[in-house]
Length: 577
Image (cartoon, rainbow, N blue to C red; front, side, top):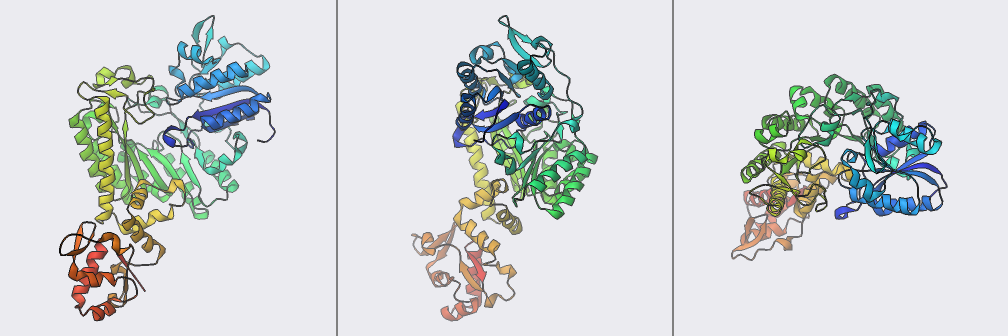
């Protein structure tokens, strides 16, 4: 690590749960704070990643007394990590520790006692953290006068008045590589905030419960930040992640932003992601066209449920019909990847609701024709949301409010009639249904060929690989067929000018499909080929043309083409020169 001294080290650390490396590309909090403090004259850097790696950085700096204060980002998943890190710092290095993040408003006396943390920042952190830096490093002010914090005074929890929200977001400094403890992380992709807050109040959502006041940066400021990043980064795999809770709140503003993005796409291609609200898009469908023209490659929609009863309980302000229509709009506009979740163990959950969600999900996926991905998740009792505070109103029982029995892999709630174990099995079955459906659609030609081929172009970097591509890769017979088409090494029969001169070429080893059924030589994807078809099938080596196969076998042209057409429908042959 390069020689440095830090006034504050900001950390967002999680254990490597389920062998997944936490990269947190869209979690800008600690880096925005770093940028803000650096502008105010303090040396600040942030690191997001695994607990073990973060602790290594922490110890390397603290052993040399190169850090004055540590700030920790706390969310619903990493409370125990933060308790452990706080103890480690207080016992070993005796320096102030400040905790903030979305979970902070739910942290009470017990967290202070278990962790030894000095101060908790509630809600937006920039101005509050600056005052805390002045207090600890410059001996300016008193904790009792700092808005937006919680602390222990005379063994009692003190919660100061909330700080007013920052209204002019354009005045906040931009994140650059100096904000990162590992500067190379800056170049992995641009996460950018164009606004803060959410005007909606979904019953399960923390953000809508706490910061309903929405503030926006100007479009000019956003585009200028993107220009700066594109100038600094010469990668051909640039991915921009808009971190707003929904980018589709103001149609005119979105239109202006998308015009600017489209102009920049003409000079330099990049991919980008945003979240959209179903109802706002349904009301103003022209926004989808704007997103597509600007090169949006992935959009997340708040689907959550397939019944009006549950959507209403969640306060989603949309209907199943609106969801269906918006998925169609995104598909038809050419947005390659659409994502949405279905929540299990949520409002009024029952076997009936579960079956209706499955039916709705299948209908949506089929209609999307290879664009929609649906995740199946269990309800998370996020702090201070209506569902967490009053689960009985939604027909559920929260069994693990503290998130100690789950790492996103096991339900935390149950109902009067469904146990957590039963709900977990339902989640597994739902996911399997989706997996099987996607593969079945690919096998039955329900996804346009051009759409399948487009997935290969983005497959060489992580953000470009969607769930449909990953399912394609699971079935070697399908993958090799489309890869041959993508590489230009083969064509479909419909693309061949003169089929008699084309050379049929199988894309998989024939021996793998040998049939043991009497009278049948091969079976491919459930399609059986008789013993008398074997000679024609063995000649699909690309060495003979269709005309030559006819002559070689003595069969009629019609008979040969009947076999070849069946093989092509099984994604087993392409036509080459």
